[in-house]
Image (cartoon, rainbow, N blue to C red):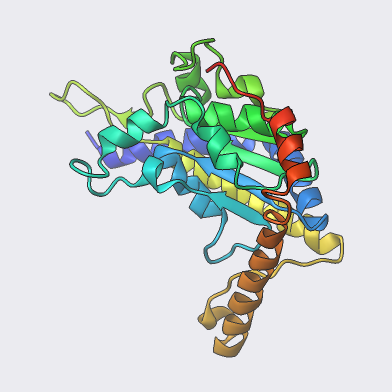
Length: 275
């Protein structure tokens, strides 16, 4: 049995699932480009291994400013596995009601913003809460989930609602239930997950479409590019200008935080959630 061939074949099926979502990819790109053209940011959030997709969008080579990666280390710090800052704590914290509200308390949100929330199961409390809070502020939410896995999973929220219940658009990684795709003879449990494959392809399809829309609108993005592609001097200039743009966009998200009038507005919109 050629398990490498098996995984690659299943990955091809994932690519077909992604390709079938071309219209949804275009819609997500349209919303995100409108946010960036308005001088605002697309908020990215994922707990656990979904952090991978956040970092795939920005910042890395072939990426550009306009995205706000919200990464909570308490939910994503995996390398220690056990002990202080271990995986058990991270898995516990991503199901603590109210944490999403505390995270978003740090930002001055606008209806011009948009959001991408990543959760393979779509059933953990914090990602769901983040999506719900964004929608309450009139922000378009794109959810990136694994549809088959989410449908067979039980929400950790008391009301049973899932991430897809608070999404304006749902994208599917195409991975199977349980994520792992390869069965090893003699081994009871499958190995080699596929959601990262589908998720990364979706992220980069969206990224490419957003770059096209920004360029067509006369605001081509400042793309982080390798020196061996654009030359050393140009590469440095692109990195510096892209990071500066990110800083300027991020500054807008802090302008009214703590201002009495804005605090009252936030309290009215981000009411406590019975999760």
